[in-house]
Length: 124
Image 1 (cartoon, rainbow, N blue to C red):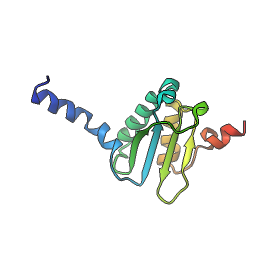
Image 2 (cartoon, rainbow, N blue to C red):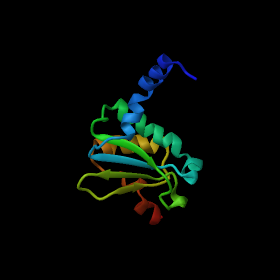
Image 3 (cartoon, helix red, strand yellow):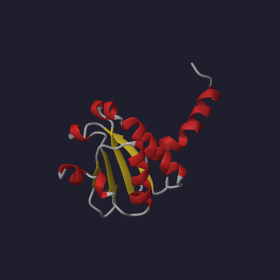
């Protein structure tokens, strides 16, 4: 069992990551974290979004969360971006590098990275 001081230190250290995964912001980034997603590399993608949102100071506007199976296993890792008043954008076959680009161009810049979307993948 950890001491109360150790638990408080762990809580403080993890506070930014937990806050990013909970809340009511206008933009939600949802990473598919079912077994297929994790096997395809979703965990580093999730971490890249959490770290990027925190690093860019977007925590008050953007929530990063995880979900189970999205149902399109052949396209894992899958990330959905939900923005208030806009249609959901589904990014597929994500990597850490792609997550960084989506964060920069879509989340911060407002421009969907169309070459990473499911629509682009289905047209190949």
